[in-house]
Image 1 (cartoon, helix red, strand yellow):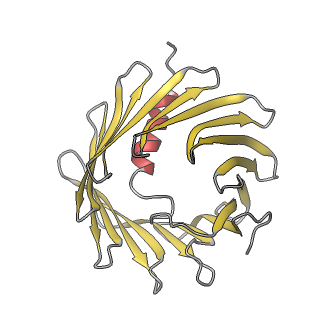
Image 2 (cartoon, helix red, strand yellow):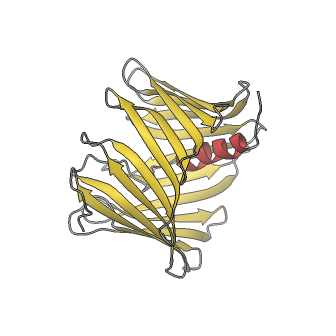
Length: 271
């Protein structure tokens, strides 16, 4: 079996970047609005890429198109579903060449159980496996390569039904523990990262507006210096942000994300 170097990079991104918080820092809510377009602007305010999303008649994400700054399609991802659950996601070039595939399986209770990554030739790259406690809370997440060798793992603990700690371990002995704190409304307000020796690595604080929506995040170094900031802007009573602003520790813009939504079943964005 041919093993590429990409699995290690992919697993690190999936595990260490994607499992702490959802993209916008708060759990996704059921909404009559669907995200149909996402435009990324660089530090100078110029478009760098756009993602366009289309949905099935039952509201499932059917296709995602990644376009460059000029609007040219760079990549297309298409998903298929069974009984309302995604079972496969295929990725193609603009000319239709298959570049990768993911397959998904679920437990008897409908919870994600495995996610397998393949290259465009059908070679297995990675396998992610998930396990849960009696209440359906995820307790472990492991990622292995095609030969079954461990690449990374995460173990979760809970308190009052909310994630309390996450311990992320790598194959080379690296380890990070994330401890989360919540306010009296149950909103996450702090995520503190420590290394294998217990030495602080960084801390993220979360802030909310008067409607309980995530208003911003600030990331601090182990020495308490601000190293990054994200601000979320909303339109009227919408629960999903219309714009996301990201800055470095000095307040300089890094990128801006503009999101456009449409009512479920509508053909064009509703702004």
